[in-house]
Length: 238
Ligand code: SAH
Image 1 (tube, rainbow, N blue to C red):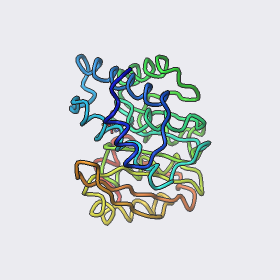
Image 2 (tube, protein in one colour; image 1 turned 120 degrees about the horizontal axis):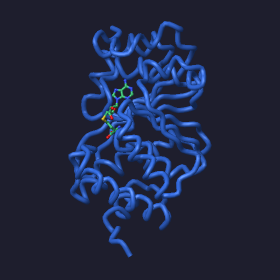
Image 3 (tube, helix red, strand yellow; image 1 turned 135 degrees about the horizontal axis):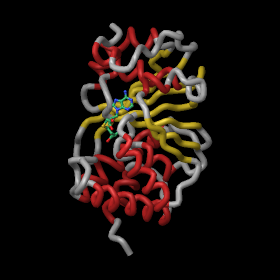
Image 4 (cartoon, rainbow, N blue to C red; image 1 turned 90 degrees about the vertical axis):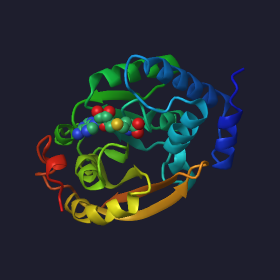
């Protein structure tokens, strides 16, 4: 039996229901990240409790605000080592997930995680958001896009909102800079057809402050967005 007391306490504190199977999957994922991290830089957070808090609890935080629904078709943009996509998939097994990243070797790792954990209805896609968001197979196809630690909110809105269906949502995971980033990103969000729905501020159990910015897709994204790969980060929409 794995010693998962710490994780159980975290989930209980966040009022997130769990099963033994989910805890086992989170542990298998944790062990795989730690092992792979020896040869590939996936995260600087390797201490057990820190990992559970700063990666797992953080990835699952939207559950506290009931902003993710089982059955949603979800895209994780810039998933890296699988955050928040893998923990969310474990907690929403009935949702279809696509985990996107521009670095293929990280996706190879995630494919191994998917196989080892026996996850279904989840796949990975290699490419840059600026290109993929123009592909009709992905453009405006998702109920929900989530993204953590990828770019500032102006740039990220240009990356993400093209994937979201009208009426769907984009959840941006941010630290304490969320409120300030939002002020700077208003033009970009509007240009992309989005509108800020709500911003949740909360603290992780160690007191680290976090922000979840929920953006609603109100109208279709104009065809010219996102601009060519590299342009959004070089000259963010203002
Ligand atoms: N979401 C993960 C990883 C953050 S690191 C976490 O929270 O830990 C940022 C990741 O975004 C990297 O893996 C990088 O390859 C990817 N990324 C950055 N710009 C991207 C783009 N334009 N399109 C797709 N992926 C991108």
